[in-house]
Image (cartoon, rainbow, N blue to C red; front, top):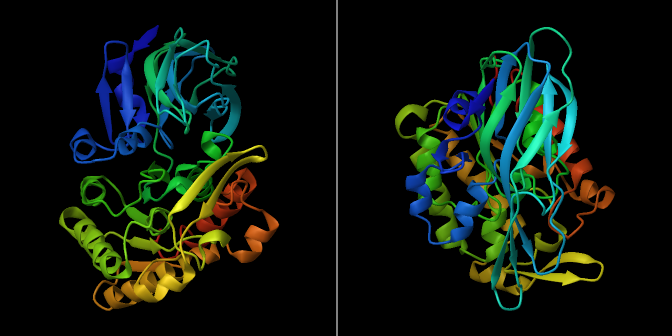
Length: 387
């Protein structure tokens, strides 16, 4: 039997919206009204990269074939990062399927000097899952976190039903490219996915690479989303872009949290997480300079540390401000909690696991961060108060 795009909707987990196209179905992690309120087209681009989004089903099928049309974005003559589909069967990794290269899907290649975008179109991708063992199983197909995926159809040799929930707890997380999984090797290797698997909770990953900017539409999206517990990791993108001063940052965080607290999340356990350690931005403000060097990509800060006295932000300034905000609000909000990001990844961790481009943790670091978050934040009796 072939399950076409519309019939795939009940199987989607981790998406907050979807779009029916002439070809298939595009999962979105921001609703259309929110994307329309953004000035920066990068918001829509990263919201369309389905980190944390998966097809979740229960079936006795032994044969599954997924048809998709991936879209990848690359710079100049650089190679596209390898993307994968992770197939989880009954809670364990069963197969890791590489997304096809430029002979399948669409590649948008941007000249970094002129900004001209060249579109290279290929055929649809056809991914065959290795034969499943006999009997009924809980199967999840996690979509690549680093390219857009248009779902076309799923072929199965047996009936397919929506999969069961892993637990009664639905965790929604918002963060930056680190939470998005920028340098993770595969979709279940992003630290939120690692944490969710370890704690056995259902994940919605609303991380927006480069776009965790305290946007009101993001706060309203969180406010309206279904979630039993919520975490927001704030600050590093603001510092990266030199987007705010301390004067505007503090009330913007208050407003972001106020919006989440409106409506149905007035008493939802909410964890405010400060930035992880990043040596280049600990005491030096942004913005960051991105360079493609022979040794690989590298980010470097352009700000002057002496400008901190004038209100410019560094990670150390942001951590102090977020802790003060949390302490102030916790006096009247018993369901708000604070976690210092250095508990997840500190200076010793960066020395042990250097950031490849000076900004983004790699796969081993994602595993460490995810396990620590599960042990600290998602543990029973921890700040998110899992039962």
